Amino acid sequence: MSVCPNCGASGNNGKFCESCGSPLPVEQLVPAPAPGQAGNQPTPGAQPIPVQPLYQQPPQTDYQPVPVQPYYQQPGYGQPVQGYQPQPSYNPAPKKSTNGACIAGFILGLVGIFTFGIPSFIGFIVSTIGVIIAFVKKQKGKVLGIIGMILSLLMTVGVILFFANADKISEFFSNANGAGYSFEEWLFDVSYDGKIEMISETEWIEKNSGSCLVFEADDKFKYYWDYRDLNNYYYTGTYEIYFGYEAMDVLENKYPQYGYTGSQICDDIEEECGLAGVKQFMIMIIHNDGCWIDGENTMDLKWDNVYKGYYDDVRNVMDLTYLEKNTDYTFISRDDFNPSSIVMPDLTPTESINEDLWGNELVGTVELYQGEWEDYYEYDEMEDHYHEKIQKRNVDTDTVIQLTLVSGQFNPVLAEDYANEFKTTMEERGNTVSEVEETTLGGYTAYKVSAQYESGQYITAWFFIDGEHKYHYVTITYYDTDIASYEMVKNTYTYKE
Image (cartoon, rainbow, N blue to C red):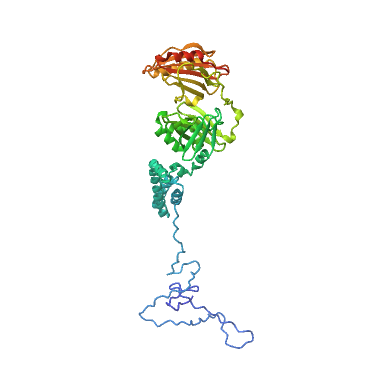
């Protein structure tokens, strides 16, 4: 057993003091001398002499030294060293995670700036949820979430205000460039200027009638009744063309008499062409200011013809409907027109049998054997359906004779129907009307109707369809002082196929 040189405790086993933990001196055994070597030799069973440690214990005083903490302490044989406290191992604090919803909301809000706010509403919801969760769980990303909320909210409110004032914005764009560039065109980058330019630079032929529409400078037009003759018998005026949503707006607000609404037009477009048809939808407004025959404007009044339909810029075709009569027209480029596709009338002037015979091969003839007659023209609501129409007026009695051929082929049984339609129209206008009478005119079975206007003037009309299924009607407007002209037409009208 060893005595601790530091505290003087005895009875220690091992290398360290059991009281203070100081290292104990190592017991040194004196080796036995080699055999035959002289010297003092310890007697058998002698005790080893302890080696004096380098450190000497200070003299005993009342002062008790403070135990020195050893640099390294090893517990003896499984027993903890008195006074030694083991140091805990290093355990760093856990890192805070970043909230994914905050990041996603920020990205959606940022993307909304470049996509006109499309994902902004979703971005606002995601950012709000992310910020709430981040505060509850003490996660990172709250700043990004708040920025995402602000961006998304601003874009959402901005888009709502933008569409709420779409009409004013559209008007602003239209006034800004003077070319009808609408808000929708700007928003979706769909410009119709190219289509309008293509239409205005094309000479159009109506493929069923052979009429010719020509656009000129300063938004003016000429509409010829026969593409082969661009010198005589044509209408003049100005035109307007609109496309897409702007066309819908003009049709609904400027021409309400046709009963179209924007939603109804959209439904029709979707049914006929799909959603893509909006880009092809157009209206064309013809402002007529004159009808020229032989170089003379024969019309004093002005009126509008409104057409709606579609323009196929791939085929360069306009499929339009004349709204006043609900009549369909197909205009194709003159370069694509095949003259053999329709039968056009012979333009060779008809030689008169005598100087009193008036008319031509298309509409028939009347022998004007009494009175003084002059060329005359008056517009009527069926004008766009005529293939040929000529008129004469009696200078003295103001009687007017009209010979007409309607475009197309017709079933003979329809002549009576047209006579009844004429009768109904005259009755609806408050005129006194006779019953439809089956008679003969020019060798054909015809249906005659007479009516009297409030002014006292009479009108008599004959309707018949010839052997080639062409639809004719002949009218005379007169006062009862000129019954002779009525008898002249009834007795001398002739048509030869």
